Length: 336
Image (tube, rainbow, N blue to C red):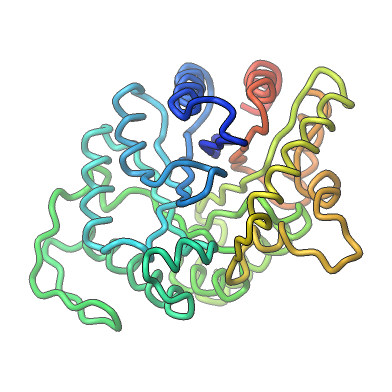
């Protein structure tokens, strides 16, 4: 089983200086480098203290400089907000300078605030995002790029550098809605699965993805990896772990639903904040989303999810530093 960390740079209530947030996260990444983690996956967000990391490419370069083995994942580059050739150049440069350790994940984004500030119409962001992903792929796999699409037109452009990994770095597309899953499967792209859908929802989406791969003529068992992001709370006792999970769930739901923020599309984060009035969204996290418990309980729960939802690449997002430490010391060795 592969295990990575979905690294947020959260700044709850701005309680400590922001440079300490970065310092603690980078110290954690140093631990990942020394232990059995496959990769750190960097989370891009804008205009929100949920994760103050506006450039996963820039942060990835810093991670590359202080590590030698760890994979450097983007989870995700919010591709609709960038010029696609700039994405291709920056990720390729990071791949070259990191010695071929890039794992590129692309996503549309779900926050209306981000779309508005960057001037990307939300009704146009899906086709724009998809064209950007296709352009990046084409820029990496062709010596020179000629492209005439809905949004972009290029003639005989040599995009440099080319990635060190050939034909290109591993690529994933964040896919949560049925339409997004179908598009990724049709093109054979591996997918990333979000941290906010319930375990049952992740299982249904994963089965749908495999069905759609088969329908599109792709072998669903040809080695594609599907990292599944799961929020994590681990503590010496069950009650302590539940308290960590509850605090983390309150922060997460508040970050997405509070302060007038509005989400778009069918992303799992929108599911996180939504409620039909009969389900407490905090309790939904506790019951159906977060992996929480003692180390032994978390090991057992992960083993169960391997069987029930096909969890073979865990991208964990610890709610606390203590959770990360206990997971690293007592859970991770049992998974490798």
